[in-house]
Image (cartoon, rainbow, N blue to C red; front, side, top):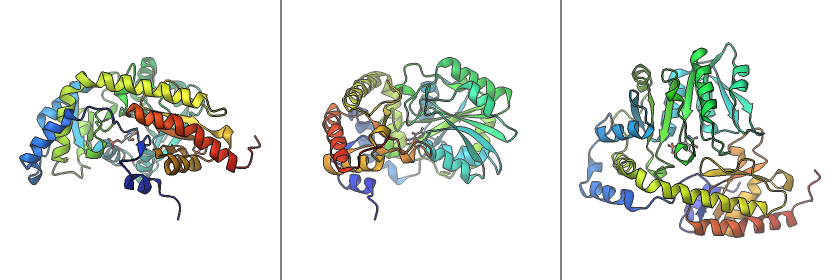
Length: 371
Ligand SMILES: Cc1ncc(COP(=O)(O)O)c(C=O)c1O
């Protein structure tokens, strides 16, 4: 039986430094605790939520993104939005311009619709799509551009002018722009494509990462009214999104301006810690630094070690959970592990001790690399 890292880690979740899923463990717990406790005391979970979503939450979402005039829709995490959008807007034979590496779950959803992704290789500077390459890649079957900004797993962010250029391409070629902004708050200069091409863009947002609510499974999308109506036909959560998740998201978004700057500051400081750790391991490199999100790729190709072996060694011997790259890149997944770092500094201390030790131990066991 292959090693099941998630099963292993979940069984020891109180002992593991969870640097594997870009989750956020820095939000002060009292941001949502009071609201959740009250909702539980009132036993709100016994009834269905108001199906279209808590009006205050919907308003907060629009305000948070600064996209008034567009219509918000709640789903069970950004993931459900991505599923609905690809299902509703793509058909057999359609093509989606995307990247490799990428958040491949979206690519899988594209394929479920009978469409395919055209993955532009971005594992070289500037480690993101460019308007020129996207323009070149457009063909007769192209229907959509997938713009994940900042990008999981590399942490690359898009300059404002590039977002504008991509939005203009979508508009001029009558393409849909799927703008996944899950990590937007971690970026220095977040830019939303909807600002430039509101009619062509569907914006997918999440509170999993910025608000530290991944386990509650709530997110959504935003778009022009007619498009949202068309997408809503594919809604599976007809009776509404988890009521406790809505309560928590409302409490978090109401107060985010107060506590998020400290989350971001600590995340950046932790990123610098990862960099110092990686710099001290000859052969290991960071393709993108600083990350505009809360994760980075550590390239270990020159070490001749498999990312799965590094993942397992770090988890089993050191209780540090990072993610092997194969889940994020068909072409380059054997070259890297991904580490996320919206975590308490103690988790980064463990990573700083464990990473060099794990690499040393594995290198001592492995045959010497030839290249
Ligand atoms: C780019 C991207 N989009 C969407 C998601 C899913 O987010 P959610 O937890 O809101 O479903 C993730 C999760 O890692 C992600 O990296």
